[in-house]
Image (tube, helix red, strand yellow):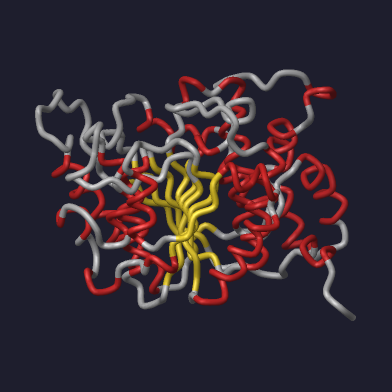
Amino acid sequence: MAPDNLSFYERPASRNPVSIISIPFEYGSDARGLAKAPRHLFDCGLERMLNVIGVTIEEKEIIACPKNLAPTLQFPKYLQETASVARAVCASVAARRKKRETVISLCGDHASAIGSIAGAASAGERIGVIYIDAHPDIHTHETTISGNTHAMVASASMGLGHPLLSEVGDRRVKVQPKDFLYLGIKDFDSQEPALIRQSGARSITMLDVALHGLAQVQKAIDALSKQVDSVWISMDMDSIDKQYSPGVAMPCTDGFTRREIISIAHHIGVTCNVAGFDLVEMLPANDIDNKTAVLALEISARFLGAEYTWYRSYMAPYEAKRTPKSVVQKSLRGVTRARSLLRPRSTHGRVRAK
């Protein structure tokens, strides 16, 4: 029988174990409060989500990050601190990927992803990066306007820029530009379009999505998946329109809709060999009714090839009746809480903020 789109809704029988790395670092950005994002995701049900979709948590780790740093006159800002955290993250991700664990990297600001991407690239595979962000983050120490290191993630990942950042991990196996795919970029500093062209990375802007829909996105993801061993997704929640993702430091207008980002994550999770992913730039203080965190959990489930929706939680007890008793007990843990987080407002009302 010829393949059809129904195959995207057939869930795999098993998945790799997952390790969760929390990185409460926020000095790659001007915003404060981003360091609370990893805890916010746990409080909003990250572990329950993984349990409901049948994923085993192999290990949880918290990377030690600096706190209460004084304002700096250094430019770029907090370069040494960013590099130190990135090296620790890189070592952790590389070790877990060598054991073929899927890694969930819960970051504060995006700068920590310098380490996670480098770690995935250092683990012996050819890694493709899907960089979902409103901002290209391809500045170097020579081109930066703000001096913020969270705007240097893409360049460092491809071996460009200051050696403290570009040489994190194995300098011989940086991500190849042809294996780097931008999705949803729209807010550019003046030099960044030229820097992207010079790098050789592939980019699909929000204008491309507006003009052509998601077909171009699908083709680009499929092409990348075929040319690499596995993909790493760096998911900046500010790529999503603030109507759906208000809890970020830089709220986005005219970004991805909820349906678009869920569809993209769904396609990636079903068609790609996912090594892991970052969730970055969430600011819990701005997260109205936990909307951003709940959406991040749904996106995460899709990246893992599963679904975490109100309907799945509703059906879980019924599905459990048709499985062995040992599986029933595991599948029902967290279902009640998952329902309360994901139930449509028309039947449940407002979700109480933590």
